[in-house]
Length: 301
Ligand code: HEC
Image (cartoon, rainbow, N blue to C red; front, top):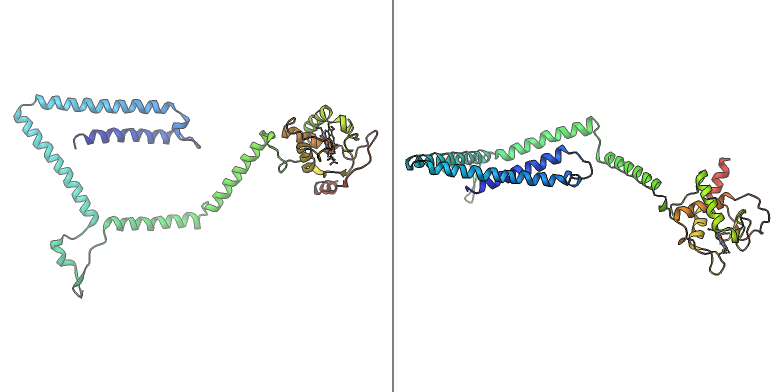
């Protein structure tokens, strides 16, 4: 027993420091120890100190004990013993109080009249630990009821919705900063001047050999009309440029040369050529393409 207390004290002390550190260094996402690795060092020092203090206190007590006369030692031992017993007694009493059980000797006082084939019933009090726990749940129920039903506290559904909204904001933010992320499913027609200018320079650098600088077409089809072989609209254009045209026609896949964001820019630029009049246009190829995007655009005008 004597060795157990110092160990418990040291462990308790360190745990207390851990809890205090965690509580005082508020860091929403991470544990304090992830955010500040230095804390491990501090805890280590605390641990060493606690152990040192325990050891020196123990040694001091040992020295003092040895310096006592045998008589005094006997007295000291007696006092220590009675202290221990008092402690034990306190625990025993507390335990009994929590159970509030009649001792077997006094069971006669609480035995009920009925008797079924020799089986009889004792009318013990409810154990206080249980009873008080029950009262606590009643109080809790009132608090809960008033908080959520009367004063309109935020319930789980609302909590969920706010979290989703926050997460969506974060996703939007992330997408804004990570343009390379576009795929054929997420690509949108870019209308910003800067995107179209970049798109134009990509087009001029890579595409004019076959599509001409004004998009009028040559080896490749005319990109300024509303007729598309592989489908119009941003998604189809993005897909054609990313994956290439039909095999053997000459339109290669550009995904190893251009980043998704660049493909989105050049595709948007190509679509912005729609309706312009090139110098020497190639006759329309493919089918007239009228997609929802365009219909919307026309409605807006
Ligand atoms: C080597 C010639 C060549 C180059 C270079 C070229 N294309 Fe093409 N492109 C074609 C051909 C040929 C087709 C028709 C493919 C088919 O019929 O499957 C085509 C089709 C297309 C289409 C679809 C047209 C439709 O009617 O569906 C788009 C959009 C397009 N190209 C954009 C580009 C862009 C943007 C570049 C530059 C990054 C580019 N092309 C570079 C030859 C080329």
